Image (cartoon, rainbow, N blue to C red; front, top):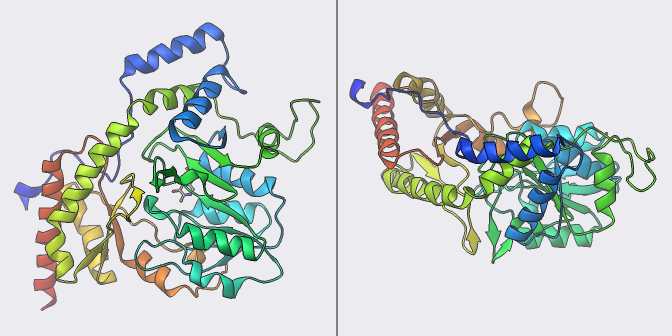
Length: 379
Ligand SMILES: *Cc1c(COP(=O)(O)O)cnc(C)c1O
């Protein structure tokens, strides 16, 4: 065991950080123009660069992904029930509840763990106003089926695309799908602005509404409080980080791809033996390799690895665990067996730019060794 133990702890992720000199140049701009927040020049430059680089429709940036999603739901004046997935981060469910809407959980698909469109129609009632799917781990939902259901039943479609920065489907940015897509630029994501988030949307009428909602509901033309707003503004330090990291993100995704493929290769035997399952990127997609997950064949084995691997200085994550309809804070029906099964058996392994392929090999050796130990203990 000692020869496989990491000297320094290895965590699931490490933030993308630019050379400090690059960030300092941007800080100098902030000091020169003395503009710290409220639609500053760096935020505007950041929005314009994102729009151009990814071929986006309209974009508005915010102080974090969660507030972006709350504001997206608010701007559409939704009422009643929203169909969503339980296999996501707490943010998705809480943005719905925070808007006085009731989440109705539909089960996921067993391959990519995304909201399964085939489970949606049975849950639509006359109270349903929207669908909020999540591109889990950056793997695109079934976009055409989602769009058709939304159209057939006259529902709004808002994607939580927090994991999907840089992902393309058939050459088009994933953010251009649905009425609105939310991105998170949190430190732990593929691309970060420290904290931050954005909404991508088609309808030009939402431009001024979003700008007002993120600034206490104050409209820019008349300077009147026209809505119940929030303080959701992105500040210039966040925008500065975004501008610096935009130069690095393509290379970071390339590095992630090598790591992802190394895991697929090293763990293939375990998959062939039915001990674990990995996700292979979808066809016609440009993936971002945001997460690498293994779904073990039993909860017992998952728990064993989760508590054992830290002895090697290796810290994996239960992500997402438990499913959102099992949070103690609420009393929801727990009728999504696939989400429960995945959530109880899944682990996220380390993946980030800067993680060496040698370290990935070592992680796989540790996992193989401990799976052997687990099996020999059992018999
Ligand atoms: C990170 C995340 C969010 C929230 O984004 P923040 O920027 O952290 O507020 C929402 N949904 C999902 C699926 C996420 O992973």
